[in-house]
Length: 185
Image 1 (cartoon, rainbow, N blue to C red):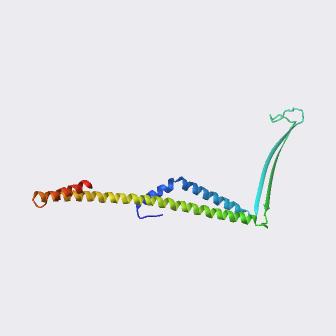
Image 2 (spheres, one colour):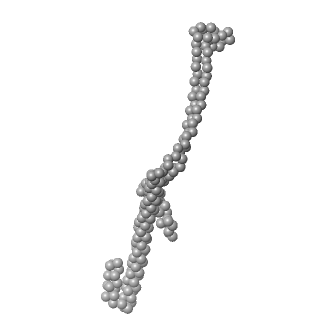
Image 3 (spheres, one colour):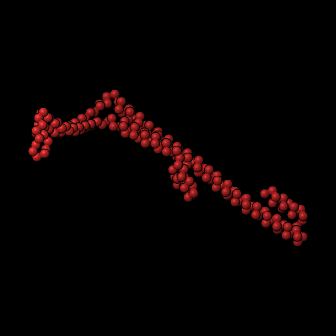
């Protein structure tokens, strides 16, 4: 949302960045999106795969401990090393005869749309509240400025009436009335 006042735009950005209700709303939107993806995945074949790797070393000792002249292991020891790799792939598809998968996906679509609408409504409500307060504050500042100008005008008018009184061009009643106007404002 863009307003013609830079201060209001900055306040909106700050409000959107720090509002916990909005953060919770976006988290709910992410959650609804993930649930919708999960529900829609049931309409497609499921492919699985599995891999296994095993390694084994067997050492056999024949009971005699004859030592190799070269300093190696005893000659009566025999070892074997064995490695094994297995891989499997599977595929499954659920035929939706009764419409269960379609209904789950449709419900997830509606939930996602409702979550998006709730988040948009929250955003608009917060924007409206902040802009209302901001414009009320601007109005109060304008009223304060007008009142200050009016006070200055009343004071100037009092000085003029006093000057006219000093020159016998105004009555004491005129001076008194103007002083009451200044005191009342």
